[in-house]
Length: 89
Image (cartoon, rainbow, N blue to C red; front, top):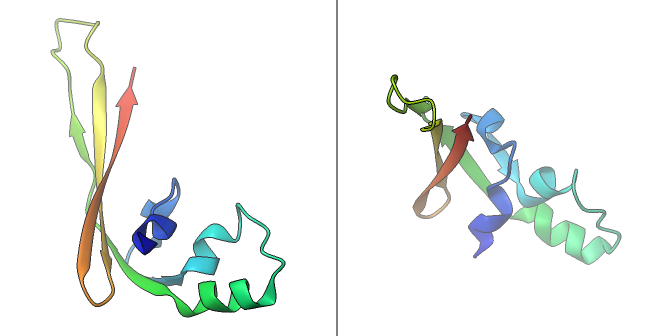
């Protein structure tokens, strides 16, 4: 469940870097409690973002949109992989 702290909309910009949970969510949430802030700063993950894959709809059909798939690999003791899907109209 902690990995959900590390997968956000701007995660793909963290390629080959190490971020704490506070670094990632600090721009979205104000954490006033010093103990909570300390805990979030101690939890960290390493990122490896693969090149995005673009899936194109049929060229003859304008009703089928294309999609971009971004694979996010997060590593701590164990590795986890997540996918972001963006539909392009």
